[in-house]
Amino acid sequence: MPEKQIAKFSVTHLQVLDEKGKVDAALEPDLGQEQAVEMYRWMRLARTLDERMLKLQRQGRLGTFPPCTGHEAVSIPVGLAMKKGDWFAGAFRELGTRLVRGEPLTNTLHYYNGWEEGNILPDADLRILPTSVVIGCQIEHAAGLAYAAKYRGTDEAVVTFIGDGGTSEGSFHEGLNFAAVWKAPMVAIVQNNQWAISIPRETQTASETLAQKGIAYGIPVIQVDGNDPLAVWVAVNEALDRARAGDGPTLIEAVTYRLMMHTTADDPTKYRQSADEEAAWAKEPLIRTRKWLANKGWWDDAREEKLLAECKEQVDAAVEEFETPVERAHDESFRHVYGTEHAVIREQHEDFLANQEREGQRG
Ligand SMILES: Cc1ncc(C[n+]2csc(CCOP(=O)(O)OP(=O)(O)O)c2C)c(N)n1
Ligand SMILES: [Mg+2]
Image (cartoon, rainbow, N blue to C red; front, side, top):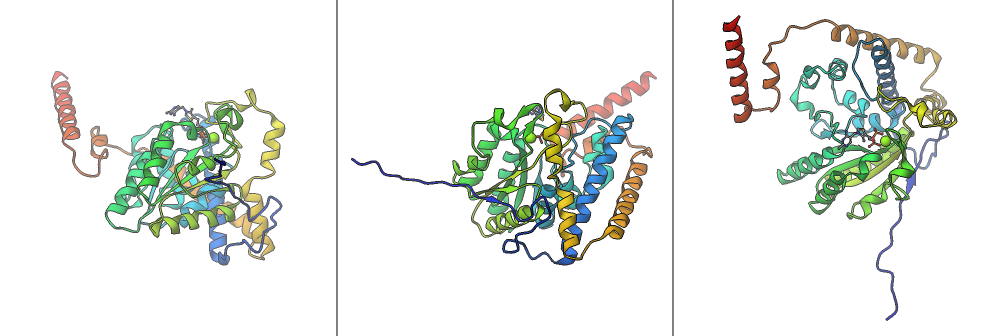
């Protein structure tokens, strides 16, 4: 019997805007001035907050956090492409998406200072799941949410994120498999920043691309330049359209670089070369986005200066609010675990209150 080829796969890489600010006109999305400037403004705000958080942490005014500098071209377009009714099941390195979806800056600061109120969103309709530090489980949460959205007959989509290292976790594969067989409206974004703490991408997996991991589950995949907000914008909109049309999940691998330390508890000089970091800084997303806007006549130094001042003002105000103590009831954490009352939590809450009363009587 002659052998015959029964399947053939390929992975496309998309770049629209290169590091010099040159755009491929044939691929350029029609964003318009307002939307393009809005995208850059959010990118700058996310960067400003991230840089301030690092300073606060170094001054002992904030807990450990994972810097997101350099990831703005992924997180911001994704947040902007989502609709209000969509769900965001993120990991821990997508500050920009959270901000765009309406998470107050103060919540982020509270969360990374270890204060539970960081997880109390002002509006449950924001549909932002808590940060997932447990690598991978958010993919399963997203698959479940997407299945529910489909079951209920809504046109909601679910966006989830994972890192390059996370694609070696079982949860990533289980979540993708379920989403695929259910044709659930899920968009999974692999933020490939080349590092999983001190483990480089090459040591993490023998896969040629991370996008191809989706092919095994029958999911359309694409690899994009993750420092190019236009490529991300195009890919995520296509993926969301596919999800809403009932055509199931998409996997997007966004190739970027973790410009900073893994978290503020890490020292990358111990395991990587400064030359590699310098090369990565030359490709970072804000410079090229600014060039693109300037080439269109939509941006100049004066507007940049004004934006920097506005971002600083916004971050200053958030820091001031964060550092102003608020009196909270001791039992408040019991009220925010579930959206509705839960029997087990009620029992624990009652126990806690009874204990407090006993302690009080003892003086
Ligand atoms: C299940 C699980 N295993 C291990 C860890 C410890 N850990 C935290 S972050 C991390 C590396 C993650 O790398 P990657 O997925 O590439 O995401 P990045 O930090 O680069 O955004 C590890 C191993 C964890 N949080 N959860
Ligand atoms: Mg990584």
